[in-house]
Structures are given as structure tokens and as C-alpha cells.
Length: 114
Image (cartoon, rainbow, N blue to C red):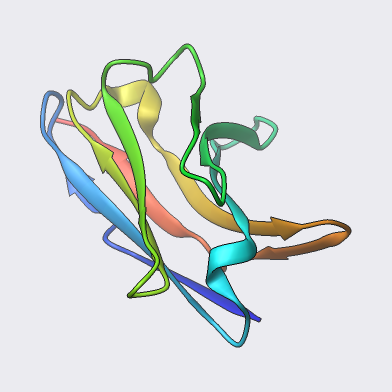
């Protein structure tokens, strides 16, 4: 199973970015999917998640600003990030889980700076 993130980049505070996570080699519809991030010197943290049934979870720090979604026809998960803040700067990773199976992408850098 391969996960490939895209959509990261440099954005000014208050701006928006949309990350994508394309999954191949597995049955996308069965996976619970998540977005994690890791800032320099900090531990990796869960930002948002979406179950196979479409239920969502958000960390308090991103509630009301980020939206996670999935398109099962395209085997892709998205993270719409609005109202970006400098503290959102991190490498963002996507993760797919099913039972004991767990797969990670390589990460995409998001930098929020003026």
C-alpha cells in the first residue's frame, strides 16, 4: 500500500491550502484515514481523521479551520486548511489504518509565514 501526499507549500497567515493523499495498492474504502503533523522539535500529532464510514475527528487546535474529507471513487483523502496560522507550520503526513495494518505517506511540508 502506498500513500502519496501533495499540496503543501508556503502560505501567508490567514491563507488556505488543500492537501491530498492518494492511496494505491489497497482497498481504500476499508481504511480509517488520518492527517498527522510534526513540527521541528515536537512530537507527531493527529490533526484530523475520517473513518471508512465518513465520521470525522479534529484536534482542538484546528477545529473550525480544517476540514477532512475522502473521495472513495478517487482513492484520495483531502485536508482543506483555512485560516492558516504560523503554528500550523509542520510536515503533514497521511496515514491509513485497518486493524493491525498501518501505512504512512512520506509527508508534505506546510509553511505558514509572512
